Length: 193
Image: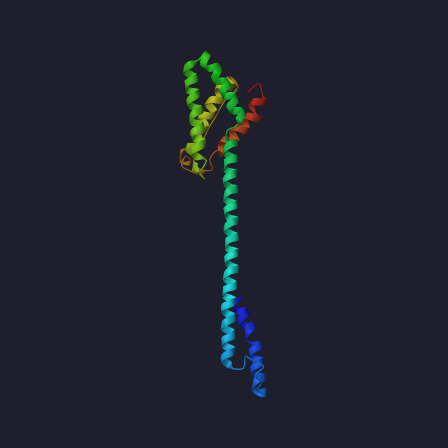
């Protein structure tokens, strides 16, 4: 902007300076090379101020856009947290606990502890981008313990995870989503287990 103003300021005073050399007419106020430089500097300053203001507005718009994106990301994280533990799973777990409390108080105590630890894990990992595979599998163990109580002999679990992978970082609840969908669309629909 400022450079364009300087380039634009040069022709008019230069032309008027040439006219004033031949006509010596006081009608042209820009009659000296000093006036030419003054006008160029004046327009350069004006252009710099204009450019600075324009860049400030662009920067503010970018900051606002980033803030809106961050808010949308937090909203998506909250929605993901809400959906991480399926509400149907919670309803089923509470129904299971009601039955277990009467039938087997010892197992019901373990089930309550597993459910509590699952909820704590969901809340503590909500703000993390990644967790270790070992943490995720610990969460899955608690989840599958409750599902085994619910499905009994119908649910059979086989897990093969090399020890050297346990420290690898993955997004929280990634495996849980896969396992939960496998149970929901697999064993839940299959009475043979």
